[in-house]
Amino acid sequence: MLAEYAGETVRDEDHVALTAASEPGVGLCTIVGIEGSFSRQKGAQLAVRPDGSTVGDLADTCLERQLASDIEVCKDRQVVRYGRGSSTIDFRLPCGGGLDILLDPAPDRAEIRKTLETLRQRLPARIRYACDDYTLQRTYYPSLKIIAIGEGPEIEAVASLCEAMAIETEIVRKDDLTLGRMPDTLSYDAWTACLLLFHDHEWELALLKQALTSAAFYIGAQGGEMARANRHLALVVRGLGEECVARLTSPVGLIPNCKSPRSLALSAVSEIVAGYEQLRASP
Image (cartoon, rainbow, N blue to C red; front, side, top):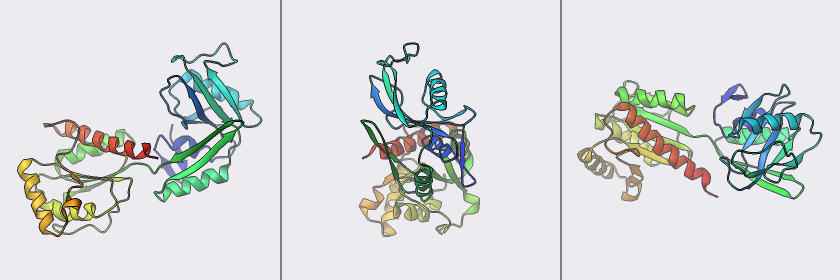
């Protein structure tokens, strides 16, 4: 289930529960401790609306139903153990582990809205969750954005895949460009990736110069060995230093020698998502 904030649909799965919790009457459940193994990390969240419906994903439907039931009768914030070591003997986690989950029927909505506004500005934000002996400093990162520029079936495959994955994507087709000019509408930040998919590589140079001198965390361009060598030389001739040009990823993707637009799209987007997840894993 998606959530909305300030009239916009929030697609990032890491933000939807917090977004829902900005609404009156919505409770928030946050994992603050894990014993053993579990498929979600500390800080994962689930929001529970007044009608009992949930927003977010904690990987276990039975756990989510139990949380929705427990937070309904919860008067104040408290940490409850689920699974191994729980006092509720009729509820166990399939993984055999134990979770400490902070149930907060009335989270600080002003702080949540402040955090959401910071994320809208494409900046990281933090919230401190504390109860009893549990304290968790939770960092939220801006959502991944991909600016994909190019032509042909490859760019359409990327657009379709990103739509299916609910990734924020800006698609720029060659027909909307002027050769040799950098579009003034494109904006890159540290949470944005640039992916160029051209067969006619002369369209790339101005676009690459713009991206390589930006804060974009990933810049990739498709092409064979000769195209890569010519591109490198042309960028240096245009005044970009070797360190700057070295930021360019080419060939793109995790799968070598893709022979179809769909496999190239999957390969490239997977590489971008992997890079983004590494950013979110950084301290």
